[in-house]
Structure formats: C-alpha cells, structure tokens
Length: 231
Length: 231
DNA sequence: AATTAATTACTGACCGGCCGGTAATTTATC
DNA sequence: GATAAATTACCGGCCGGTCAGTAATTAATT
Image (cartoon, rainbow over all chains, first blue to last red; front, side, top):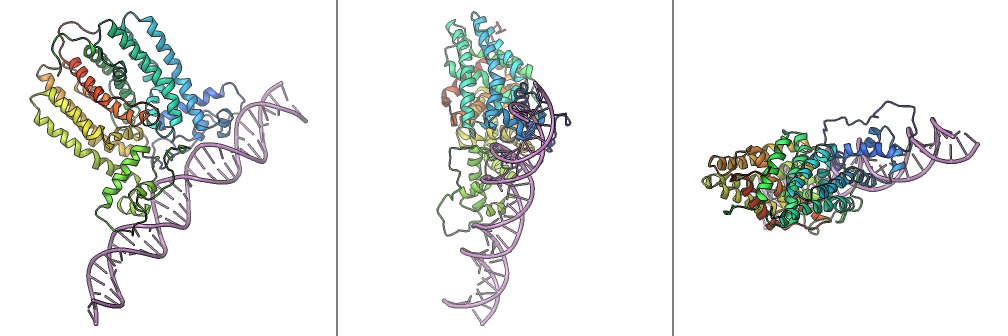
C-alpha cells in the first residue's frame, strides 16, 4: 500500500518487476487496453484502488507507466474501465434470465444466485464488491458510476424476481427493495470474506454449502407461512 | 485516502485545522489517549485507515502530531487501540445475554440482533466492519488482531445461540458456523451500505424495516418445516 | 512566598521516500 | 524520414515518523 501509510510489511514482492523480461518492445495498440484493465483488475482486487501503484499495473501488463497514460487519462479512468468491462456483461446475462424463467420465480432466483457465483463471485471479479465498498466514499465519482450502472440495475433485477413471486402468491408481500438487499447480502458477505480476512488470516467458508443453506433458508423464510409466526 | 492517490477532490476540508482555536496549551495527560482514539475512530470510519492522516487525528483531538506519538508508537498501534476500546466492551455485553436467555434461543437471537444494532450498527462504531474488511489485506497484523478478538468471539456467540435452538428442535440442524455467518451478513450489509454508497451517492435503507424483515425471514426460514421443500 | 531548579507534556519544522502525472527521448514500422 | 508507439527521466506534493526545543507544572531552596 502506498497510501498514507504503507502496509509496512506486505507479503508480496514490493519491488516492481516486469511480467516478462525485456521483450523487444512490441507495438500492439489494439491489445493494450484489455491487457491493462486485466492487470489493473487483479491488482485493485488484491490491494485496493488507492494502494495500487500505476507502475505495478503497467509492469504486470508488460509495459511501462508512460504507456498506460497513452490509453487512460488518469487512474480513475482506468478504474471506470475495469468496472465497465468486468461487470456489465455479466449483468446483461442475468437480465436475460428474467425473460427465460418468468414462469418460475424460485427457479429464477436460484439461477441468479448460482449464476452470480459462477460468473462473478467465484472469479477474480468477486473482489469488486469489496473494492467498491472500500473506495466508494473516497472516490465518489467512481462510486456513482458503479451505483448507477451496476447496483441499481442488479437490485432492479432481483426486485423484479421477487415481485413475480409475490404476484403468484409464493412469497410474502414484503418490500422488494429490502428483500432484494437481503437476498444479495449473504453472497456479498461470502465474496467479501474471501477477499479480506480469508485472504490474510482466517479460514475460508465452504461456498457451496453456504449458498445451498442460504437459498433454502431464503425461499423457506420468504414463503407464505402455514399459521404461526416467528414473533 | 492519501495513499497512492488522493481522492483528488475530497468533499470535506483538506486543510487541517485544530478542533478548538488555540487554547493556552493545556496539559491533560490522563485524558489524551481517549481523546486521540475517539478522534481516530471517527476519521478512520470516515476516510479509512490508510487515507487518514495522523496530523488530522491530532488536530481533531486538539493536539499536535508529535503529541500523538507520545501516546502511540505508530499508526497501527493507534488502530489497534481504537478497535480494542470500541468493540470489545459491547461484545462482553452480548455474551452476558447468552446466559440470560438460555431458555429461549429465538429471544436470544432477537436481543443479539437489535442489541448489536443499537450498540454498534447505529453508532459511529458501525463503521468498523467496513473499515476492517477494507484494510484487512493491507494490514494483516491488525486484521489478525480483530479476527481473534472480535470476529471469532462474535461468531462463537451466535453459533452457541443457534446450537441451542437446534437442540430444542426449533431450528433445522445446519452448520452453526455457516448459519452464524448468514445471520450477521445482512446487518453487516446494512452498516456497510450506510458507510459507503449511502454516504456518497445513494439512498440509505430503512434500517428498522430491514431488521424486522430479516429477523422474521431468518427465524421462519431456519425453523423446522412442515413437509414440503423449497427445492 | 518568592525565586530557582528540575521535570514533563507538548510543539512544529523537517526529512526521506513514495507515487501520480508529464515531458523529452528513443525505438519501431511503413 | 516521418509518424506513431513506447520508454525513461523527472517533477511536485504528500505524509509517517523524528527531534530539538518550548511552555507548563512541580519540587526544592531560601
């Protein structure tokens, strides 16, 4: 970390070294942006946005810092590109599921849950929720960008699925917004755990078991009840 | 964030100014540590650990940076003191509830949930979960400290409550560790939301409604079912 | 009680290293 | 040899941590 205070003793190499040894210095204008955002993603996820040095990003992409500035105007611009490229496609896939399973809200939610896990949570992209939560307050512009293009869109999708279930009399009629937030909270917890404490000093959770229990508990808990109440 | 890149345009004042105007320079050896940890807590919560400048902490405590170093050896030492002072007492209170409600696991869980919200979540301390998740990987020593003294202890407490309910035939016999993580995920989500997006560019959630729905859904979902299954 | 001596809490200027960003230069390609 | 691509050298500001010195307080001496 380079921020205000270095991690003092970060485990990984602190010396910046090129990914590959001095290659003959190729020119590959087309491939550069992707290589840079890929390198940036893994470093942002690993150390956070503020703590990641642009020189490292460049080195991991096999390029010099100056080259990075040929393709991105600033560190924040690079950040936005990482988000746009990484998350938005997966979100579109999720929206396709809505039409596909409109007749079965429970199956839809299950597809969304496991689909998210496979396409995002269980991937390098799974570090993005932690990244955004961590940096939102210090980089409001990026946060607004993410909130508008990812969070609102994702919550609308879940909310639609919940409304579908309510309309069919499968779920109790609670606020779709709150229920949507409830639905994602445990999976976000899972991915954030993996990218924080589990990455430094704690056991990881059993993801498959966790998701299975959660889905069952959620559907069971939201379902219309027989007679008695938890209260 | 001071780290590798400044927030560039952080909303708040970036000029450091003393909390009170130049007082005659009092000497208050006894009160200093508390004043410093209090100032540090609010700044850490507001901007994160790495992004908080020690000069700011000192200024908010009405003291100079040099004085801070008379009481704490380093920035990390200050961090640990903030954690220890802020969270541990509340945790002890929670453990007292276990004995008090050993006969009624549902009531126990409700007390733990709402107690946490009142004593931590709805307080300045509510920023600590986000803080720790954000900084864990870059400051593994502090993370280990927090994991050992707060997380493990808290999860053990919840796990005990769940085991109690299982033994009485109220809850289905799922892994107490996973169920414990499930139980806390939404409340952590709530407090982290408040200290990230809600603090910069999104609406806050209705905490009371959120907690009520969550508790009902959780108890209802974990309860032994009649016959049919969600799958 | 007044003066001085010794102690201790506190200050703020300063240092060294770091990193985002820029400009000058070199190398590749046609 | 002209142009585009990439590198290297460099700048300026920032911040954790240090330290020589100052102000407040207490103790000793008369």
